[in-house]
Image (cartoon, rainbow, N blue to C red; front, top):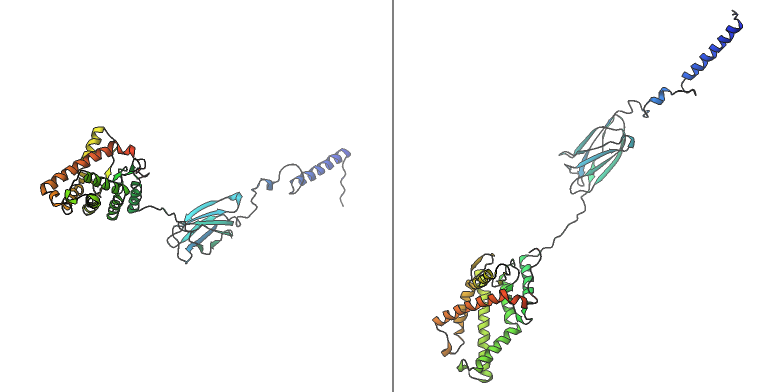
Length: 362
């Protein structure tokens, strides 16, 4: 054993040096409680090894309920690790396959959407460095929400217009069925033209007018061959009503159906008074066709001639119209129509409380 001798002062310094070296060594040891930070405190919070942090790969296929591939489906990937939130999306190919390279290892969720299908989600977990092929993701057919837009056919629209026109009465009494206050009214079909003519002829006011005309004719002893009394009045009433019926059915139903013309007067209501007056007068010889184009009103002109010719079948022989008088009366009928149209254009509307109002959007 070797013994070292130190002076007392040197001994004290030697001891102090040894203690200092021991304290310094403890401060450098991991886990020591001395002041200063350890190297570990400066590292990232991710304590995983590089192998544990290697990206993974996902692939899968989108199919429908029958197992057929769904192309064009949108597949959205999101990682469950909020600290490394990663959201991406892709679209399935023609074979329904999709592919996500370099995804964050751990839990994830896929959200799959496609037109006509309900949204589908898939959750899973993938390990680091793993290439995982997912089970087929089957999409269900979306619940059908059918929006039905109920639209009326042209015939149904015209039927509604007729119902409105049948409520049109001058001073609340005189029928004003053959006037449309909608310039874009739907054309009438054949059945509706005959229906409107029939509705006119069975209206109480038509019978009233026929009776009044027959009464005046009997009082003035017109058509003397009919005689007087109840029998004479009945003959005059029948002839008057027959004039109205033949004129209405031929001029407003039969010929308009054959010639595809609209028997109604279309109220103008706009423009200068002169332009409206010319419009009203012109409508005695022109009318709208079922194609909504203006054309010669053959229905009214030929209807007046036909009604005048037919009247020769039931009027007394001495009072029958010859061919010349028939044409003359037809011309007078056209003139009367022009006067009637002028009244319609300037006066009748304000006297017709329940008139045909154009429907919104028509």
